[in-house]
Image (tube, rainbow, N blue to C red; front, side, top):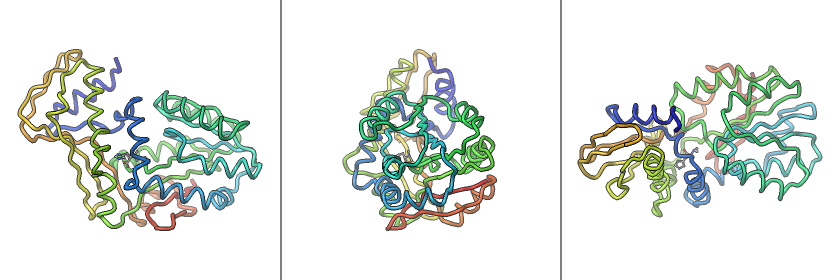
Length: 312
Ligand code: AVI
């Protein structure tokens, strides 16, 4: 049993209001549903970042100005769909680099490795499954420069305090000449943002519901998915998309393996995810608060998203 997950589930479901962390969405089934989300036309984030990396990989690498060889360390690499254009550019330009994708899902890393090997045979790659910081501790010992990638608006899933803590930790594990390329989703027409998360096909709903399924499997719980719904809101003032599961009835859920029962009122919420959208001044402030400065922002053609290059 994953003891941290167990502790977090008990803590979250016995709190008022209830919450669960979206970091637990990504078991193998959840990672697969997330790939479906990335393919949805309304989920513009993937297209925007793909646009940046297709059009501007050359400028990003020129701007980073590394002595070769260098490492590209991708935190939360997923299925590799975000990075492929950058890797293609590096290979085509005969640049000497080593790719280190890191993810918590073994299945995602296996899919990624096979895909990259097939598309870019001969690439130097060391895929790793596990905790970012354990792996970063090791890579920071090497004396070749590191370009850290934290793409896909992954930072948006952290609260302000968590994001600061995480970025400060990145900073601590970076050598003076290392750089960070961080993907951040920008504030924009609120309807565009709402459609990305409130999809009519219900894929995002399934993504959230999968967390209850996971709890059923891992802790022998009896969540009946038919008695829960999905709800999400976007607040254009603070840029927060917040996702919830809603109990459709008053009910008691038993988590047998954790010897815990949880009471739900009718329409009671479980907060499952924050997806934060940033303004440019907020990005500046976050960088400087965490020991970085922005070297350059790379925007997509619609100005929906930035891959922001940060230096220590
Ligand atoms: C991984 N993360 C940046 C996604 C997001 O947009 O917050 C996860 C997601 N949640 C619902 N749709 C996609």
